[in-house]
Image (cartoon, rainbow, N blue to C red):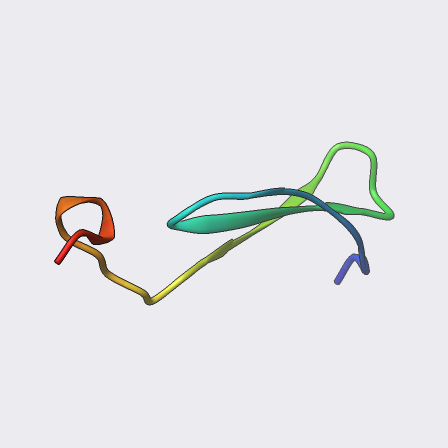
Length: 40
């Protein structure tokens, strides 16, 4: 399995990482669920 090297992006729902394979990215999905953009 390729190694995770650097985080390229983080949003509300996922993080994207660069790996040691230039043709492969790692996508991690978050379990946090928000409604109405986090407003209360």
